[in-house]
Length: 261
Image (cartoon, rainbow, N blue to C red; front, side, top):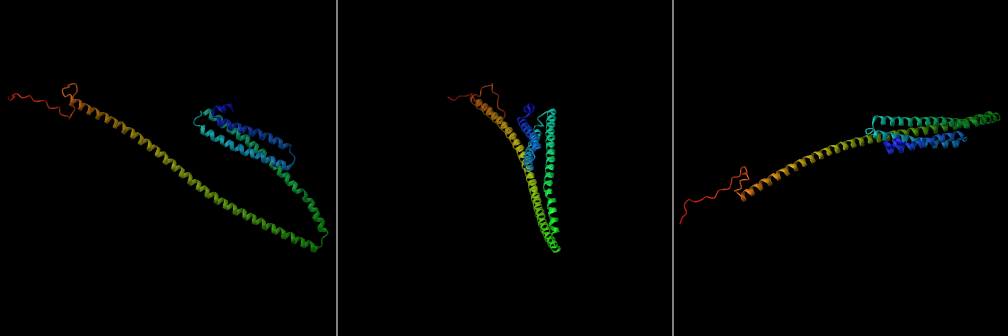
């Protein structure tokens, strides 16, 4: 468990819960061997079955966590985790087989329990039949046949109701399966659309950033040109500043050769 804690705290916690259930199953089956009463054995088996269901759920959760960490872990760690999972499954299967064995033995005991009085009932029926007249035997036989027919009719009705319920359940499951399939397809489409939208937003962001850089450079360039023009206009005789291409230099002041008196 300490090695699992170094990989994932959740894996270590699940492993601890599974180990606790395995210890409880081992103690439970040992206790079951000492129980003689069939009703108590049945209750004990139901309790152990519930623990095995919980253990199965935890193993599935362990497997999902292992698959989530598979990309991050190195091959040796993944191999160790898979071997750990297989060991859990093997141990759980051993308890399941043991539970089936106890359930079979318990069912055989119940059959023996119900079959035991049948001999006494048969002997009693034989004694009663020996004291009946032929007409009474025929009437009794007809009555038993009528009761048997009624039981058969009731059984047929139960079977038909069961078939109808099964058909309706199968149709409902098929409808739900198709609905789930449509939902999964819609979720895939939504996921694809979100992914494409994210890529488009990123491209727009890059274009906006590029446009801002270009605008900033153009603004700096225009400010520089304006600054040069202003300096040139204010101080036209400054030779350190070159003329701006396309802008004519300022006209020189003309000197008159003849001045009127």
